[in-house]
Length: 86
Image 1 (cartoon, rainbow, N blue to C red):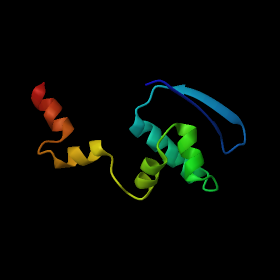
Image 2 (image 1 turned 90 degrees about the horizontal axis):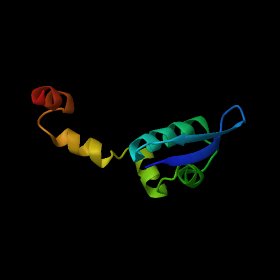
Image 3 (image 1 turned 180 degrees about the horizontal axis):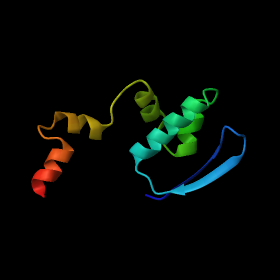
Image 4 (image 1 turned 60 degrees about the vertical axis):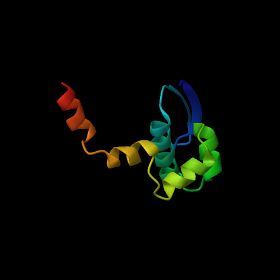
């Protein structure tokens, strides 16, 4: 997935980035942007980063991603599994 988004930095300048990110990485960027700019609405930030508003809201309220949840249910950690495969 190739995503392009624009946002205003805390210095007031406009930044445009073209990033190849999965939704979890975009979510992390959106959350950090929201923490740096608490005056912006969740809807604005979700639209800027191309994320579902409800998912962003759930993550802000502490819900884990499905990937994190499934990894917590596994008997072996991802690192142990990779080392066992090697």
